[in-house]
Length: 58
Image 1 (cartoon, rainbow, N blue to C red):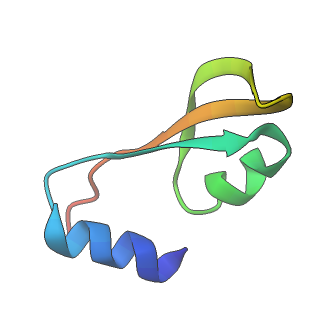
Image 2 (image 1 turned 90 degrees about the horizontal axis):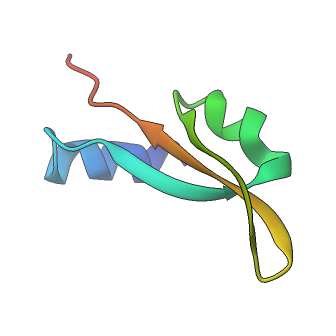
Image 3 (image 1 turned 90 degrees about the vertical axis):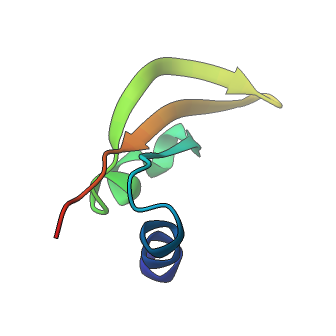
């Protein structure tokens, strides 16, 4: 995940990152700076939650 976020920051430094996380992994993604931006929703029968990581200025 760290490498992916580094790549996103390098290529799109002014863009936030959004993802649809499986709900049980919310704490994992929060450890990388993501915050919940939606309520829990079902995708393919699995609870998910929308999460975003805002632009981090160095």
